Length: 232
Image 1 (tube, rainbow, N blue to C red):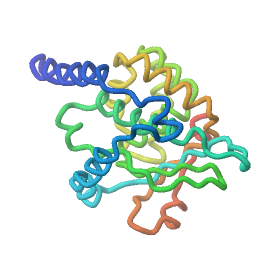
Image 2 (image 1 turned 135 degrees about the vertical axis):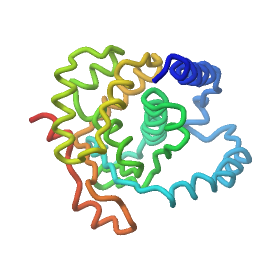
Image 3 (image 1 turned 120 degrees about the horizontal axis):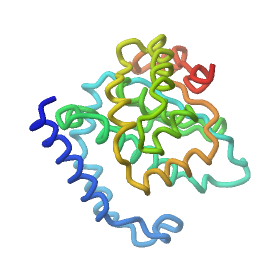
């Protein structure tokens, strides 16, 4: 990448991070009791999102499943919004920090597929390339520490993990994405939120080798538990 292109690329990322700092935060009472939710804005945002729905239809998506430590069945899912929004925010920030502006514009978001209370499994759909980076950094303790350190150290560790992933996902494992993300400066609130997310007890992280084309049971048969494989 030329210096000019790099400056442009880094410039848009910096602008995004600065804009992000100024965003309004959800209030305590909005989270817990639904007070002062802007319902008009909420439904307007949904109805204006047909472009993302169309984008999904044009994408080849794969399944990722996170199995959390099961919450007591006698209690509600108190952490639902915190976990869900952290997942979506982390996926988005990961794309900002690992992709060029052109790649970012082309990439789709993380789509929620289902949340299964009985088995504590949260399922999402997205492009395989991005799911691999997303899932790996939440599955592997060694790589998680590299992410939160904001340093690309332990390069031999990273290369070893990438070789394991390539056995199952081939060319969809993009080493440049990993290097860009691991070497990028990350916001402190993101680091804190990811640690809190991991404290909820992620026991399995599975990614499908086969794309999802409407038959979820067929897709589930191709799931690889990358948390287990990366620990070998």
